Image (cartoon, rainbow, N blue to C red; front, side, top):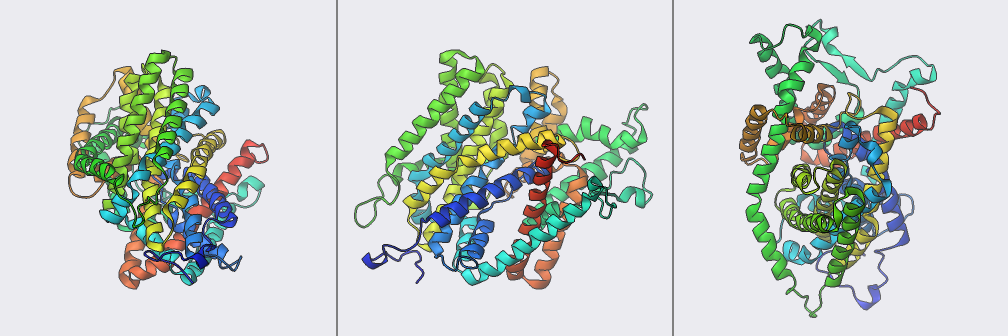
Amino acid sequence: MERYAGQSVTKGEESYREVTPAAVVLGVLWGAFMAASFTYAGMIMGFTSGGSAIAAIVGWGILRGILKKGTVVENNIVQTVASAVNISVSGVIFTIPALYIMGLHQEINTMYFFLATAAGAILGITFIIPLRKQMIEIDRLRFPTGTAVATILKTPGSGIEKARLLFFGMIISAVIYLIQQFPIFGLPHVIPEVVDLGAMLHLPTWINLTVAVSLMVFGMGLITGRNGLIVLAGGVLSYYIITPVVKALGWIPADVQESAISGYVYGTMTRPLGIGMLLGGSIAGLILSLPVIAVAMKSLAQASKVKDKNGNNEELPIYYLIGGAILAFVLLLVTAYKLGDLGLGRSLLTALIGVAWIFIASLLVAMSTGMTDWSPVSGLSLVSVMILLYLTHKNIPLTILMGATVGVAISGAADMMQDLKTGHMVGAIPSRQQKVELLTAWLGPIIALTVVGLIWNAYGIGNDKVPAPQAMALKSMVEAVLGGSVPIDKFIAGGLLGFLLSLSGVPGLGVLVGLSMYLPMLYIIPYGLGCIVNEITKRKKGYEFIVEKVLPFAAGLMVGEAAMTLLFAVLTVAGVLHP
C-alpha cells in the first residue's frame, strides 16, 4: 500500500521501497539528460523551467510502465535526484557564457570552475537543511511547484499516461528537428529553421518579423502560459513600438541603412534600457524581500529547537551543515587564490563574503519560492557579479565564476525546499532526500559547463542561433563598468521602469520585461504563440486538461529538440557533420 504524509512506518513496513538503486540511477540519468537539454534551452530563452514534474512523470512511466514496480516515495527519490542534478544549470547559463562572448574562454580553468560551482551546489543544500521543518510543517508555506509534483506522485496511473504524452512529444520534436537538418546530409530542404514573415508580407526591411520554427521554444511557451505573455509584451514594446517611434522622430543617423535600423535601435536604446530594467527589477526584488529575509532568519533560529514526538530531529545532523559550509569555503578559497592572483588575505575575504552572501541569498530564495514559487536567481546573480567585480580587483573570469557559484547555490536551495515539500506531502523521510541531493547535486553544474563549451564550439554564443540574453546583459554591464562608458541616462530610465514594474505585485515583472527586450523576436514570437495557445486551450478545455495533457506533451516538445540539437553539436565538434 502507498504511504502518505502523517502515516508512520511500522516495523513490518521498514523495507518499504524508497531509496533504491533503480530510483537513484534513473534520477541521475534523467536529471543529466534534462540538465543538458535545459542548458541549451535556457541559453535560447534566458530562463529555464523546473524539471521536478517532468521527472515525476518519467519516473512513473519507467517504474510502473516498464519495471512494473515502484512506490510513491521511491518515485519521489527519482524526481528529487533528477531535479537536484538539473536545477543548478540556471546559475551557470546566466553567467559563464558571458566569458565566451567576451573572448575570455581561454581563461576558463575547467578543474577550478568545476570545483567552485560544485561548492555552490553543496552550500545551497546544506544551508537550507535546518529550515525544512520550520518552513514546511510549522509556517506551512505553499511551495506551489512542490505541491503540484506531489499530486503527480499520488496518481501513478495518470503519471503513466502523462509519460506516454511526454515521450510522444519528444519524438515529434526530435523528428521535426531532424527534417530541418536534411540539407546537411544533401537531402531536400523540407522544413526551414526560420521563416521571414516580414518578407512574405512585403513589410519594410526595418521591421523584424523573422520567426524560428522551433517546437522547443513553442513548448516552453505552452508550459509557461499566461505569465509568459509578459515576455511577448516586452518584445512587442521593443521591436514594434519603440523602434517605429524612434524612426518617426528622426533619431536614426542618416548613415544607418534601412535594413540596419532595428539593430541600431536595439544596440543603442532598447538593450541598455533592458539592462537597466534587469538591474532595477533585481534591486526592487531585494527590497521587497527584506521582510522575507527577516522571517527566514527567525525560522532558522527556531528550527534548531523543533523536534519530533520522540525528541529527535528528522533532518540531517547540524554537522552536515557545518561540514558542507567548511568544504565549500575551502573550495572557494582555493579557487580565488589560484585564479585571482589576489593574495591570501584578499582570497580569504572573497571566500568569506561569497559564503555569507550565498547564505543570505539561499534564505531569500527558499522563502520566496515557498510564498510565490518565484526564484530570483538571475537578478541575484547579476547583483553578485557587480559586488564581486570590485572585491576581486575587477578580475572578470573569477568574478563571473563566483557569480555562477552563487547562482548554482541559490537555485539548489530553492529546489531543495520544493522537493522537501513534495516529500512531506507523500510521506517521505526528509533526511533521505537530503542525502541523495548532497550526493548528486554537484553533477548539474559540471554538465552545464560542459554543454556551454560544446555549444560554443558548435554554434557560437551571443548570436541569433544562441542569443544567451542573460549572459549578453551581464557582458554589457561588466564592459560598461570597466570601460567607463555606462549609458547612465538609459540605465537610470530602465532601472526606474524595472523598479516600478517589480513593485506592481507580479513577482519579477521588471526582470522579465527587461529580459524580453534582450531576446530576438526570432524566439519571442513562437514562445508567445505557445503562451497564447495555452491560454486559449485552458479557457476551452479547462485547467485540468492543461495539466493532464498539454503540459507533459509540451515538456516533450521542449526536451526532444534540445536533445537533438546537442547531439548534432557533438557530431559537429567531432567533425562528423559539417553544417
